[in-house]
Length: 253
Image (cartoon, rainbow, N blue to C red):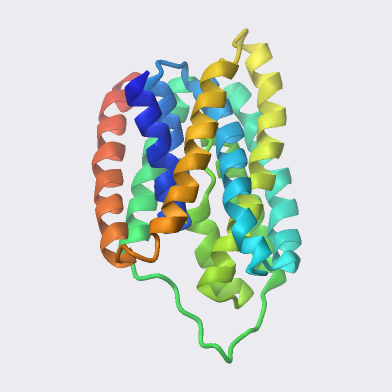
């Protein structure tokens, strides 16, 4: 239980420090530290990630660092995509979902090792149709493997929405909360089909610890070099993703 609590704090801490990426720890924490079945962990991840992201978005919204137009362009298609991805989970084994999740971890690590996207302040041109398509795609990924997708949403908002990094992070947190809520609703049906149930006590503990970690991360974010922190976290994700893939891939094949 102590290891699980520390893992939950790490989720919120990394989300508060980095603005994205932290939520990808939720599924491994629930599977390996709390011993949950894969589909239960993915459903729980959607609930916890959505709640944590919503709490983390509040300071950004109060500072007006949320672009509500892009929330609609990206978030609503993302909700449909997440719901569809959760429906697809009916036809995929839990082990296969975990293997796909590990591949997403590796992708997240590679994205984090790259330089953050930059847009010229004078270039505010939006690409709404590309944003909608990206929202659907990232949403589907969220529904299948239970990640918030901030590591994909933030670059899309910067490059396709013409947004600054701070506003992109705040906007992505609102979008993550919307998508996660949609996917969680569908996952309740998925769990019922497989005769599985959520452990609400564990879910409450993980969510509360994650929210506390998020606020702590926000307080520390100005005191720790972001570039070094992202590299360290990305390297950790590379090892974790490779380890999960090594454990799950033989069972899938």
